[in-house]
Length: 332
Image (cartoon, rainbow, N blue to C red; front, top):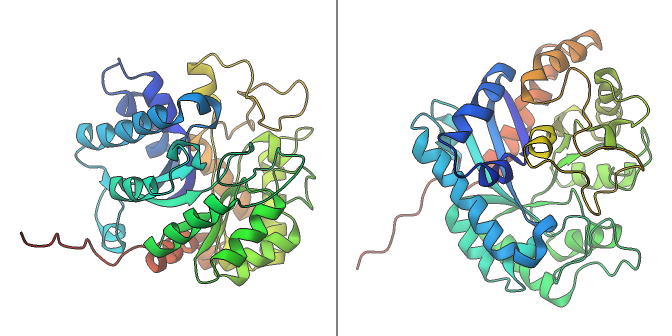
C-alpha cells in the first residue's frame, strides 16, 4: 500500500460537478492501479483567490460527495480510521485564502475533516507569505493567530509552499506542533525556490515530520524529468533527514490541467515554456507508482526501508497527530 500526502483531485471534481460519479470514473481506477491505499486530498483555492471562500467549500463538498458515492472509501479523521478496511482519504487545506481573513474558519474545516493545513500557496495572503513573494514578511499577526488555532486543534502544519521567513516563523510560533511538507523535493538536487534546502529538511526531521517527494518536472528537474531523477531526490532526502522522514506526495496535476484546459498556472513558479500538464514520463499519475517502486528497488530500497518511504513514515506521523477517536458530542 502507498500513502500519498498530496493530490489536487478535488478541484477537478468541482470542475466535473455535473458529471455522474466523477471520482469513480476518473480517479478511483488511477489510485487502485497505483496501489494507493491512503490519499490526502487538498482544498486549493489560490488560483481563484477572489472567490476562495466559495471555491474552498465547493471542494470540501466534492470530498463529501465522493464519500457518499463510494461506500467503501474511508474518511480519515482519527487514528482509529487508519486501521479500517478500504481505500482511505484525508482532507487537507493548501493555502489559507479560503478562510477569507477569518482564522476562526479553521474550526469549520477541522469539523469537515481537514487534518493537515498549510498557510500559503506561492502568493501572499492575509495570513502569510508564500514562495513567490519578493518582499518576504513571513507570518502576519493574523497568521500567528491562525497558527495558534491550528496548533490548539492538533493539526499537522504543512510547510510545502511557505516562504523562507514563513517557514521559520511557523516553527517558532508553534514549537510543539507537528510540521511536515506534504509535497516538495530537494533544492540541493534541483535548485528552485519550490524545493526545500538541506537546513529546512533537517528542521522538519528534527520535529519528527516527513517530507513527501513531489513527482512534477518543476521540482524534480525540468531538463531531466525522469523517475530516476526523482529517486535522486529520495536518495538526498534520506541522506539529510534519515530514512524515517521521507515519504511520497505526488501532486499529480496533469489530469486537472487537461480537464480545465489550463494554459498556465499563475504564480506557479514554472520555468518559462513549461506547460501546466507537464509530467514525468511513466509517472503521470498515481497509476505510475509501480514504476517508481521498481526504480526505488533498483536503487537498493527494499524491505522495511522501502515500506518506510511508501507508507510507514506517513502512517507513523498520522497516528501521532490524529485524534485517537471521535469525541462524542455533549449530551443536551
